[in-house]
Image (tube, rainbow, N blue to C red; front, side, top):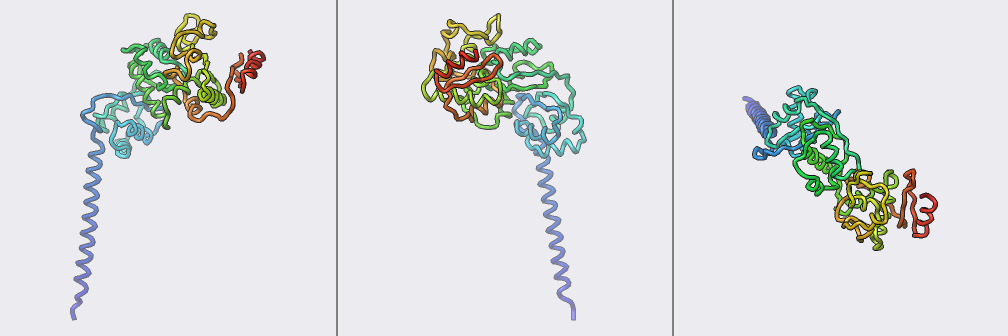
Length: 321
């Protein structure tokens, strides 16, 4: 008697093999399409350039993630695999590069291998925009806009150490600092909080004092008291030949200086940040300490002293100043 089941089993196996081959071919086609699309420019029509920084010690994964986060490439996995496939991961240079979303992943990978003669610049916490511009111009980074234009983004230039090519302009460095603010300050910050952070940055030099100083500012705002912050007067006065951008000793006439930034003469917060604060000052403005302090002063050694009442504050003045 003939074995009818054998041909049926063979046909079943053939169908399974065919299905497996079809699935593999389908996956291969999808993978090829994904690979080719992922390496194309993110936006071929966008010819603008972005300043992109590769820090010393950054691996290919970090570089790929930064490129995707800054909307320069389509896919960080594809870029990572491309660099590995080309065997150029050790050729990627630390430095700052001008990249465009109109560049393909291959062009970007090639661009990151171009060695640059970089220079290191450090922007300290608490500098105002004019100080930054003055520093950049002294280091031969030319600007095509005035300090007043840059000052429109006061508070949003993140203080940091940057490795930049010598041919970069001051305009590009300001853009780089603004982009860095978005990268480093990855949590929500209101305009009011940023203004308070700038006051804290100038008034409290030591990190542990910053949440306490922020609490004093909030307490005075909530009670309707004038802030009476010296740094706002210094900002309003601006540059002096004796002290530079921050006048050291304020006089009674300085306290009366007419400016919306003068918190001795105007209630509430100044209209904008008075400097570019660092991360700890911003965090203090967002998460101030809970205190019943309404006054503070800094003695000659930089130590802060707090008071709940004007009487206590006057005692601190007599004791520490």
